[in-house]
Length: 250
Image (cartoon, rainbow, N blue to C red; front, side, top):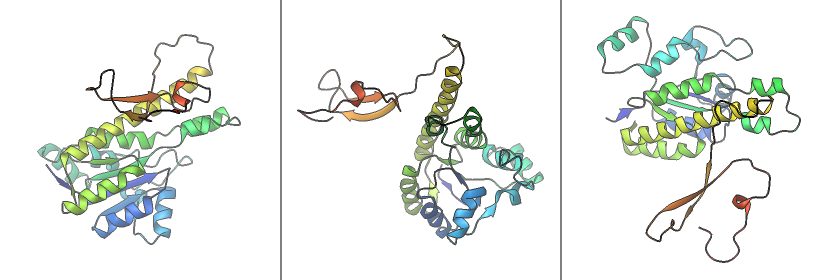
């Protein structure tokens, strides 16, 4: 089922391309809810936004730690549109569904990679509200489009232009798949950082997150497809950092 985007919530740490993305949404008549610095950036660019506290009825508090953790946000994301009891709850509590969430997270890995990063700074860069919205939207991708990377902006806008402002279910599912992969990698990075601070040699769980480096021309045999993955942010010399001199690069 195609779902027309009527309301979007945009809250991003990496703001590259977000003004252009929001402007295209606004041109298609989408109501935009936004938070903090994102709302300021969009407003400065002349894009009309609804502050999130106007939706929740609560101001941002605790140095921004609590902004979107509210039933008016998560109810708007998680409601099953075809379930009568969900529809009644939305109406009873005056909650308007949110059709698109555009969120990327505090740069935890980039922060802790700095030599001068303190433990307190690392903790403050653990995003809570962002992953919560991403997971709610991704779980309910039957109705909600979740955008977690600026590289996805163009394809979402192109789909909406070609489809009367709607997004098809295949694209929503693919975006949800990417979103859950992103939040899993984010949590794995936090756990790895905390493990490194302890004297526990063998933690109960170790999450290994690999990042796709490139597609290969073929796999073990010529008729097979393959890709090369590597550990992100590895400074040491290793096979993944090697330069291919002769032959094809992939």
